[in-house]
Picture 1 (tube, rainbow, N blue to C red):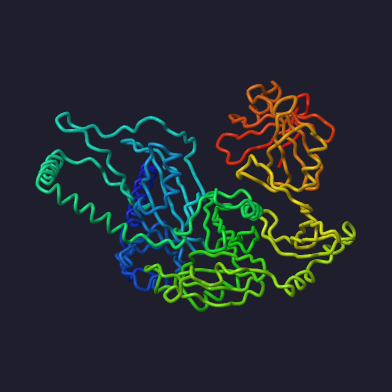
Picture 2: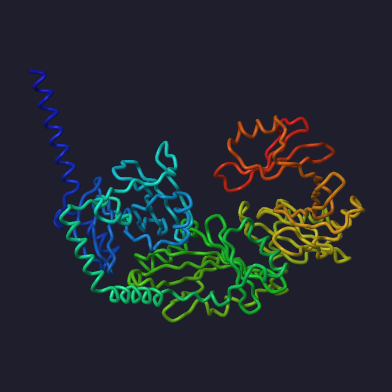
Length: 602
């Protein structure tokens, strides 16, 4: 009897599970939806038309159409909006995303492509990438990108290995010509891709119709294709920056030097010249940045784009109060030379969401108070007179800023530079340290020194500017400015060397390359002319066995970029620059003269 009871319970359980699964996929009536859920949907999408409701993983899902776009909105039982998904074709994703997929997943195809919205998370792209093999049940790789097309997260299945073989396509009948690979349909997460296999009668009927259409209407098809292309080109958005684009070679050395100080390790840099202002646009840590510099190399301001969760709560509260149901687009902080810093937030009002007409709001960065709103229906942000205007600090502004410096800054200068006076100060946005104070001091003989302190007044670093000279560079520019104190120190150390080439590294030290008695040599000086390192270039294919073994065991497969013999602080070392497999930035390894690992240079 016990056996029968166990079997009976098992059967009932299986039936119940089957019914439960079917209920999850079953469409629900509007009357079955809690009032909080329907009310939340109406608040989020007042003009949308609901196609049907369903229940997925205990969440209520509204499949709807809004201004011609199909979407799915997910809500919890209490009406909390969770996310909205918009299936989109791959032709609408940024070029950078397509480039990433083709570079990292050759021969793979995008099987799922969505735009997603979530509370407190900006609109982002969600992709699933699969190897298009017939009958494959492999899990997809999941990729998410931010609104500018930069990778946020990549999740490959456990044990995933990139396949380099050719995909196995469906076989065709010998009597018919091989067909082109079928395009993968763009679907949302809860839909399976439609089968590409047709019945023989359907194939035969389709082939007959295709042949007939090809014979009778070739010109009509070509005209239709041209018409579609022309319409697409006509609808392309106008880029007001395009007419001001220039090449990097056209950027003066002084401008480039200022840009490098404001944007460390920039990616995808593009240059523009508008009137008397150079604008360098780049990507910094996955977010856009724009640096405005005068023709003489004087920094004006920087636009640093920031995520929604980094915005001040009082600014967001203002927008939430006066623009209920808004959709966040982007925001940036405007750091200015005159210290009148601002924050700009661009968003879509409910009524303008589908038409993509944004509204903007400027806030004072210090007081958090609203300065003004921008309605693109009547204003063109590109023609804002303040966009390219000179941003300079008045003498009153400078003196006021000096008075606001932390007491520890004044104490440090009085102790270490008693004959110097503060000439100027400004706040800079450092990628690692946040906001820091840049203090420019000058001696009675007009020698200039630049000191950096954190917001509490702790000393960070210094720069010497007591005389600069333009010399040949081996870096990104044809020429570079090097302090005369550094050039004099080099001549004293290497009196016979003629015409070295110079560069400035990320730590604002200066290094020179030349042909010495032992071959190619490089030395590194501090801004004050102190010799920090003397390096001799070695063959990267002739590492010592100890160093080669350490790199292989610790980092696995790596590219050896440089190999040096180094004299530093009176000791001899080996220095190896490697790029580990799939790493973005190089690693600097130091070893003793006997080949023992010493340290990793940050």
